[in-house]
Length: 132
Image 1 (cartoon, rainbow, N blue to C red):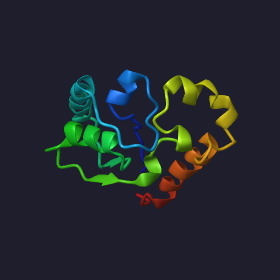
Image 2 (image 1 turned 135 degrees about the horizontal axis):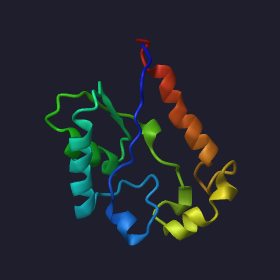
Image 3 (image 1 turned 90 degrees about the vertical axis):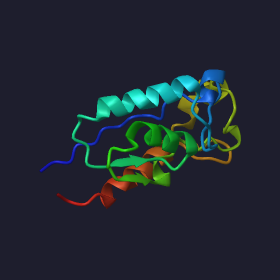
């Protein structure tokens, strides 16, 4: 039996609304983000999910708690699902961080990681999934 993986991003954060790229900073969901997280739970209720894996960053955990609390699904937080570490640019404006995204595909952000490194980090999770 094949394992199907569904990816969702965290819901809208206060930083998103202010035009900031939170990166590895915790962040919090905005009021609209909390409503969107609850909608995610409503959509996911009939998807036949077996488990929920989330980043350990606050905005992602908050999304999952609002979406899936009371569902009985196991929820596992894993740091490997964090977004790209923008290093000294964590918390900078999204325009600053993403304006030069091509530059950081393989070159790490100052004090952080490259997008390639972030993808490799998240991909290591797949090897830890049990065979079904």
